[in-house]
Length: 341
Image 1 (cartoon, rainbow, N blue to C red):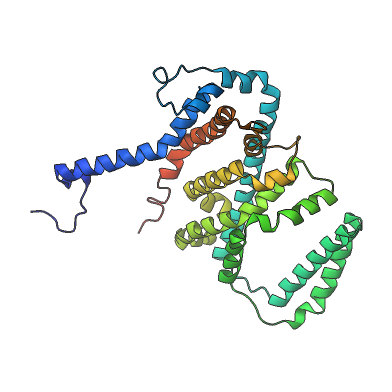
Image 2 (cartoon, one colour):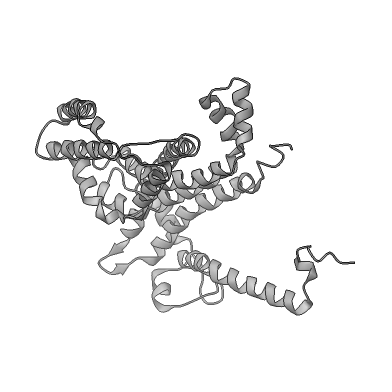
């Protein structure tokens, strides 16, 4: 007798339903993979073949050639390797920093209760904005920072104690994710002026700091939901055994959260790897990244699609390899059997 509560699988479907399902998957796979296929064949075409196309099948519609790859990887090796290395350094450093800071902040929002006063937050904002204004008006930034710290401490000890209204953890979480909703074009000019003033324009640390700040909110939001799914019994057991909150977070929560950490890290890495607008404003020759270099393949004769295709393939291949290598960590069930009833 069949169990009515058992979920249906692909083996339970009728042959026409299976054919329709597999046909839909094949069509969808073709739609998704066709842009990559087009990049590959475009990278194997001569400029005249790209202009005279479209040609779809190598060896039949056109004769493939590796001239474009030779030009990018050999003739322009020094011009290609620097943006590629910059992209790797900036993406890895910023995504790792964002993961470390964001996961720590997410765990704090889940397990600790905060009641920040609205007036204190307003004081912080006013002092920070005043510091930026002072630096923009020509004040030495070390002196401006020291003066801002002194003013902040005075205001917190006097005016800050008069405010009573507070915020909850959920308010802090919503405020963090709301920063992700803001378009980067709204803040790119102030960021540009800031790094120009302190002499960090067109440097890798400027891009790393900016990308870390831009991706911090999404890390906090994703890891907050993941930490909420972890049973509190694990931490209570560790607390009974004498483990501190930091020891519990480092030795128990982080190992259990490895799938979530890896998935979040890959997502943030892709964001940093493909970021264009901030890199366009904050970098030039020294700190140029691959997205900016791809966009630069636009000469007076128009876009050089054959070179763009090679550069884009060089961009996406490392990310695809990394995702394939780390896929087993994402798919593994780290919480399976962690709590025994």
